[in-house]
Image (cartoon, rainbow, N blue to C red; front, side, top):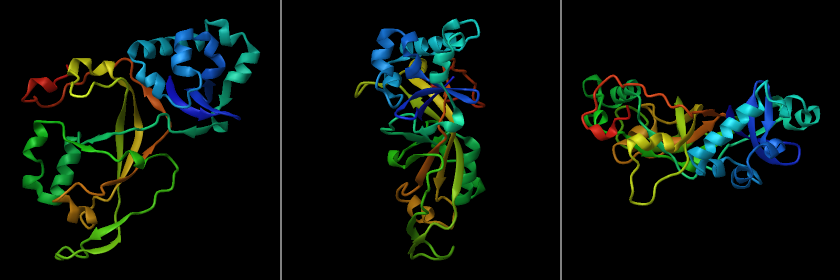
Length: 269
């Protein structure tokens, strides 16, 4: 199932994609436990309350949905009136961001990508920085740049070197854009200030993920990214588009990485 945030004729609410339809969770809330309804469904226009409720609530929510949508369960299948009110054609639904994004971190996690970008700036022989193989390289994201797919994005302006040999910048629009398809993880319960989360407990915190995320960056060599890169990671991401759906990640899969991490605390398998 895919947790989404959709708008019905009169109100926004939580929905689940099923084929060409969207199930209005509020319309079937009587089939969930009263505790889950009160905490995570009633009055909710985003998935934040459910995300923050923790894995036991996620598991209960998912299992109840599976039961409701099962061919062997009569609750929805044998109730034409309920089906008519609870199932809305996907093309009639107005989509919204599924969660309020308070903050995010953009991790530099692809070795191929890191090598390609490094080659652009430092040459092939010095493409990958030594620290990349030792620690998770992450940049603080700009939460205000997270928008829904289809939102118009304005080409940004900034300081740019007018030629490869120029040393004095000029002000102007970004000339080339970098489009990146990325995987994003939505985090549920966090950690208390000053406390860390162990790698073996990561699955208790990751709510869902989405592969339908792409970011817009001005990172081509001719752009102002080059001029600002050596001092600060400035004006990199100005549009982070999200395509509605959050994909189930109840059963996380551990995939061995192609090289051995030198410090064991980062291992998750």
